[in-house]
Length: 200
Image (cartoon, rainbow, N blue to C red; front, side, top):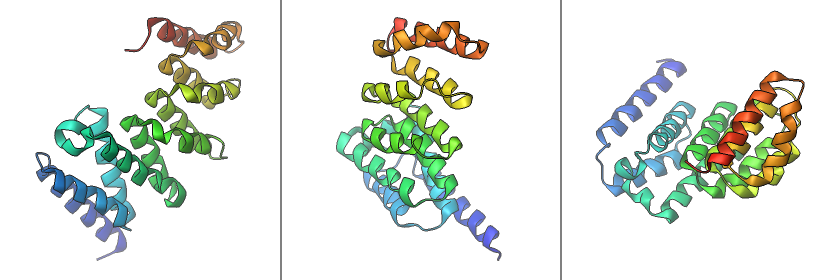
């Protein structure tokens, strides 16, 4: 069997086992996290990370992964994922950033800021989006320092500031209403509306 074939088979097996574990016990879920820590197969890791991200995004973590209702366990899961930002491949890092954003655990903030300070624009965009989902107001001064970045990075920062909803961003966002880029103006207007509306 080829390497690609083995990866595909491993991913299929993991996906099937996770499906049958949907109504699982806490121990089975903890075992899944241990698999994520120990497994060196990239395709399997990506599949496990995506599963965590999907359930977090759908608001199903506490139903499918009951032990995550314990904040310590949630933190341990975030810590496991964040370890891949140091050692994982580009694809693993991307999926990890998405997942920690969906988990909305503020312990990820410092690691995400470190990614934004890197040179990889794709990972930077995902990290900014993750900060916007986490809504940690501690990230606002850092995001404001990058607000005038041109292109996609700047657009995503505007969205993140609006989603976080901190009034400290209002003066800088208001100034962007006169920006030469119509998309910047549009995003700034929507971000200001989000801040004015308050948390959803």
